[in-house]
Image (cartoon, rainbow, N blue to C red; front, side, top):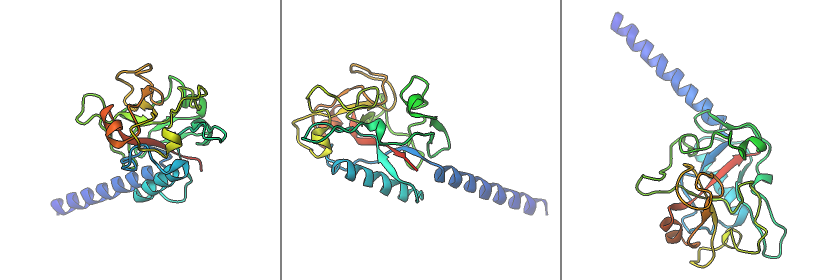
Length: 216
């Protein structure tokens, strides 16, 4: 009888734990993509990147939310788009139920909880960072540290996320907030990539990953 009761208790605990995990995932409003497009920085533009965010969220069981990729664009005869203006007002929580920022201002401050531990995928898993093999800490953003598009006339977005050529470049952040570059501890604007192709991104410590935020 005692063994039966222990087995029942264990089953109930597992059930409750599973429900808690599902609830946390359903409340997710931020994640780092577990995979990129597979074609370097060619994401199909902002629309393609947003669709990729939605597909990954759906695969993790999160539906009914509008997702936006944290990406800026500029040039190309069109008005610039700032990543920070695309993602709503917050707060945002990851798949493990951890709130990473409570507002746009908080997100772009030193108080944000972004980093290797909390910038997890749609399934709540960590992505390789500096010191891991392979290193994949370079995250596509095309943005300044303030989350806005560059205004220097240079290509920081691989032709607004439509190119996988070795020509051009994309501004990347470090999801683990360490490494090299002008701003090595920046999650959104550490340095420029070597090129726009998949091999180029991997060569500088990335894999074509990007951040996704739910705006509702």
